[in-house]
Image (cartoon, rainbow, N blue to C red):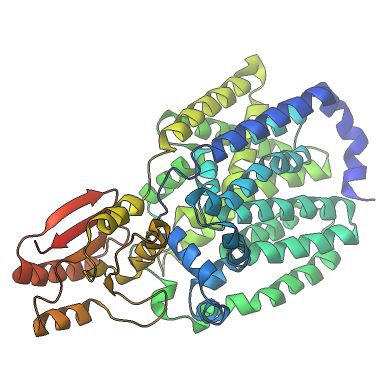
Length: 495
């Protein structure tokens, strides 16, 4: 007998006690979705693109031949489906708001989908609490307003979880097939989304009987389909696999991860209380007579813990404990908090904590709505408004050229022609060494030399290159005029 049917009668009485009229549920969920939509669409284009978003634009606009080369050798393979989508999307416009709109829509769609997934795991009030927490989550809003693939990957992970739960509990071949399809899609939207599939697999250890006959063939199909992407580890250049600025899993980084999921300040304290209560709920469910309830808790807990744990183990050798690589555990964090709120129903303390966390999160979202991560827009426009035709431009590091290319195109025909000393996106071209050689041959051939310095890649190597280039230019032109923007510095050499 399928697990869902086996426990349906025993489970119905406890669920009825928590039932909310269907019309009220629909109204609440609609309100949460519209509120989450407002947060994700509000000021969508207010911030400058940052470096990774600039890479998205460059990949979306490059030739198919070049895109295929970057897919094989560079980052395009990490978020294949998203970049393919953006190659079509950019034909509709290039404004910051338009480029981020797909992520906003994926983020909005995740709110009701999380409720649907949660409803399979917990009572109705707790499922609504999970949707509310995701709707106002600062981390989820942030990635819903970024032209990268994380919001899409979260949506696909949620879709995978939906069909996985149905497949396990009802045993239908259609659900196993859809789980396979969405698992592959999630992987090719971001490789680390595969860690959620690993968590789903391990959750089956908490079931009796275990559906290995259905699961193993589907898992094998996912693995075979993922092989072209997994081969990136063997064919990519070492510098594309590991960056020295990536952190290890230190206690400080673990604490930062908790704040990433729950929010900073008082918010993380409230979230921790809810998570602890949720863990208590998971251990309580282990003693219940209902088979599916014994499995639901471990599924959520493994979903939340497995990606950070795996990345922590990998980081013992190659540091890559990046918060955005673990964002696929964010839905699990909200589900665990909702389970905790359900445990704390006495005196409505769970509801109070959820409402308080939602209110504080909304304030945080509003505060961060206009603060750019890197202000390339104003930095580029400052140069384009003041540069003379033929001025030289260099970058530290060189690949930040993509940001000037984007904003120069947005600037329009008034943009002065500049001699850019930086390779194109994953392509050849002159660099800072060519600039210094040209200046050595003729120090007066450029009226101004503009230098963009990014703080994004704050490594010793980049800092050393920046200092050396500044010193050599200063010997030729004297002290530069300096303009400082968020995480970007612009130096003008020459009168």
